[in-house]
Each structure stands twice: as structure tokens, then as C-alpha cells.
Amino acid sequence: KRVGWNDDPARMREALLQAGLPEIVNSARKGLDQIEAKENQDLRCGAPQADPGCAVKARYIYQVARGLAKEMVYAQILAGFEMASKDPRVVGLNLVMAEDWYVPIHDFKLHMKIIDYLHTVYPKVHITLHAGELTPEIAAPEELFHIRASVEQGHAERIGHGVDVMRESNPQALLAEMAKRNVLVEVCLTSNDVILGVSGARHPLSMYLKFGVPVTLATDDEGVSRSSMTQEYQRAVETYHFNYAQLKKFVRASLAYSFLPGEELWRSSGSPACEKDRPGAARLSPNCEKLLSASERARAQWALEKAFTDFESKF
Image (cartoon, rainbow, N blue to C red; front, side):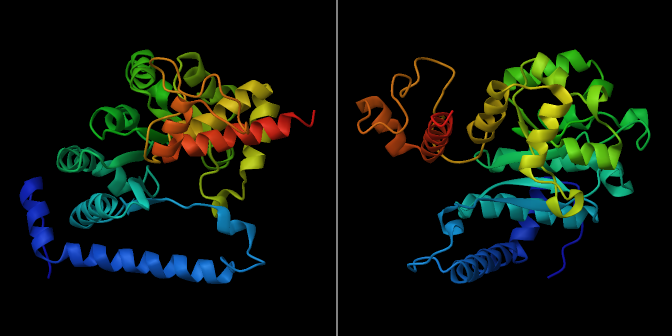
């Protein structure tokens, strides 16, 4: 059933739900089941010679193609919220496609309005937004506001790219706000260089770190930038001369600010439950065991700490 545009976001949502969106979401979930079943078959999961990839747990971000007509974008955003509410494998949603194209620029405020409303309906769904992949060479000065809008209106817990932050109004206040809200920035050094021509001292990575904004490194689309996580860390070291301790912070942040369920291992308030425990130890303190049994995110973080310990023991 075709649904036209309605400026009232609540009525637009109701119309889409009545027109069969829940059935589309259920079909998408079944499609995900089929994809994972094929993946398990190809990797021989459960067999004696299972591929190591079977041990990798996958979680998904629902991607919205924001360069489409507004009613299609609304339908996709709503589908993302619905799917993330019903399928634990889908942990959040994002807006993708080139940020400087006509529709993403023209409809950006509308997209934020849509997300702002649907966030009130689905407050537990995580939001990460591709924002600030802009420069004055490809976008007018009045369009360099997407990071602030994504944080304040789009309720973004993570920002992808965030390159134009120093071009936004009152950037110091914005950086301080992001640090206070613990909004993580996914920095894509290779992509930002190749696509935007922004690298080295021109890149705001150092400013994010100076203001205490959480940061991790990312590849962007590996099929486009031909990058890898190894390359991103190598580039970070060669360009900014980060030491090993800083690289560990980047890695830890990728899990601390992931959308895995459960309490964070190194919570900022109070004494961390596993603070006095050693990764890999045969026995853990009762508080640490309690946290790890209850939190998938904390378990992933504890496994990372064990991997650090095992690696560092070789040197």
C-alpha cells in the first residue's frame, strides 16, 4: 500500500504501520536469519574443522539511505527503529550516503526532526550518525552544522567522521558538550584523506583528544577506501606519533561505546567491579564475576583485556 507524505511525524508513523511496515520488518528479520544460516554453513560452524570466523559475534546497524525522497527516508528510519526494538542482533541505526549530495543537505533538518520524534517513541534504540564528513570546498558555510544537530537533535551516541567540527559555530562549546555527553567519534583517517583531502594537522583528531571526546579509529567502507584496521592504526602512529597506551585507549573505546547490552566494564562512577582482578586469572572476585555474568559488553571488554595481557606477556 502506498503512503504519501504527512508533515505530522506521529501520523506518518501510524500510516506506515497500518500500511504493512511490521510485515516488512519481519521479512527483513527472516532475511537476516537466512544470511546468518548461509554464513554458518560456509564457515562450517559446529563442525570439527570450523573456521575461526565462527567465534566472531556479529551485531548490525540498520542503514538508512538518506539521499532518497523524504517519505522513503522516513519509512527506512521507522523500519530501523522497529527492527532494533524487536531483534537483539540489530543494535541501532545510522544515516548513510554522501552527506554533501543535494537531498542529504536539503533534507538534513527534516531527517533530524524525524529521528528526534521517533527517539521519543523508541528511547532504548541506539543511534549513531554519519555527520560532519564535509569541508568548505564541498558544502556552503551555513551547512556546516551537522555534528551539533546530530548530537542535540538526532540524539547520536556516536558520530561517524566528524571532520568539520572546527567549522561549526562555537566549536569549543560543541567539543565540550560531546565530551560531557560521552559522544564517541569514529575517526576514519584514510577515508577522510582520500575523499575530503583532510589529513595530518588539518584533521580534528587532536582537538577531539584535547577536549576529552571519546575517539576510536575506523575504516569507513573498506570496499571504497581499500583500508583495514591495521592500516588505520599504522597511519595514526606514523602521522600523530601515538604511543602504545593511546592505541589501547582507541581499542578500548570501540567496546566501551559499542551498543552491546549490559553495564560497561570500566564505569566512570564508583570503583570498577573488576579493578583488582587480573584478566586470565583462574578465580575472580565476586563483584567481577557478577558483572561479567550479567553484561555482554563487560564480557567483551574483559576478553579484550585478556588479549592485551597475553600479547604484552611476549615482550
